[in-house]
Length: 105
Image (cartoon, rainbow, N blue to C red; front, top):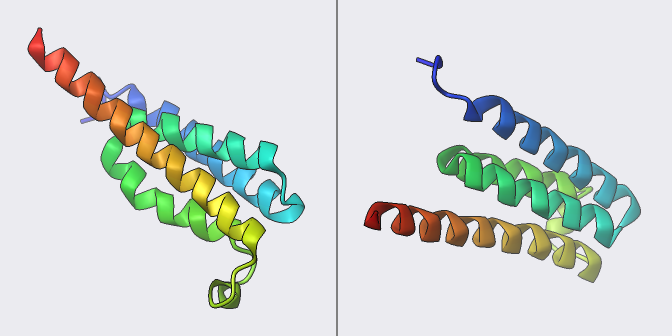
């Protein structure tokens, strides 16, 4: 099954980096960490789309320190989650654009 599937280790590396950056962003409310998390999410979605859709929720929940905070989220938490969700959308759009471009050839 996985003899020719070289994308799995790359995707795993992207998701580990995304979770690590999400936990750092949660602790420090740092925009740099949120941007790193978003970039890792974008690359992971570009690598393998279906797993990206499944694992995105884990990264979003890693950004929120307390599940009860979802009822009354602070503005910083909303912005951090928005950065990661926007990166996911960018990854999806790039994936679709590249797929359409490659099909035309």
